[in-house]
Length: 360
Image (cartoon, rainbow, N blue to C red):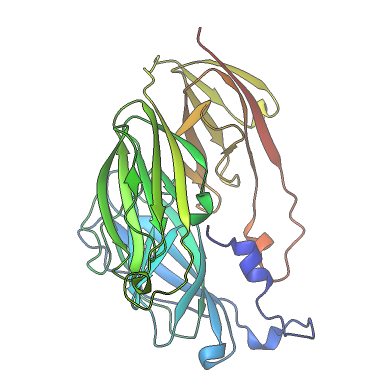
């Protein structure tokens, strides 16, 4: 999974063996690149260097990219791409699914920040090793032509990676599942008809990261499995590299929508919300709140999330009551100053709703 921005920034400027902050080696808000060409008028991306330290191969940067929907209609997914500077590589990223192919960086929205109303913006960031001027990224969304240097935006409803091995996820019929694994993994196999493969690229033996996408097409349970492979296992003398197995358990549910919607807000903190299977739960909170988390999977299933920290837009999340049971849905506030090398004393406000789903 992606390293959090908090843990990334916490290590910036620490001198090994001294524990001293190298304040003089870091410059905040270094530069902002010109906005990208908005393609056919639907998307604009601007990159800014928030911090920079060191020199040459020992240096590094923290980059923030702002993505804006410039279309007159809402966008539901976006992709940003640019070319790394000489000697640069991506160390970590947050608020986007980031991949590299050669010197090209591609960032695709996550589930919680893909939906952008007209003129709305969201941000994502990353830590880079090596130094280069702020890039001018290409940007595309589903109201415009995708950037020519990137693959078309996927914006899968749920995306899983290698740390999700043996995890169980629940999808609604019609939702999509993205699988992102390392280049040594083979194309995944699916054990039943509940999922249909949409696309696959990379993986062994291409040397590129594996990316696969599936659509939930029927109710049922299915396993998505893959394993590592290496060329030296197939040519004498055979090497002794171990094989890593990877499995994801997927439950697909087909729930008729009752048409009943229950909306909760800040005033409903710690309240109990009673739903029927097929009801829609809408969580409406201020922009400082992070996307909500569900403690027990499968009871309610996330349909979409928009806004929330760090987009500056109000948080709006929709979930469908899928199966009888109980779960908690919770979130908390965040603040940009919490992610500075010296965090500010910004208080965290927590919010939780207790959800009970019944069949009638």
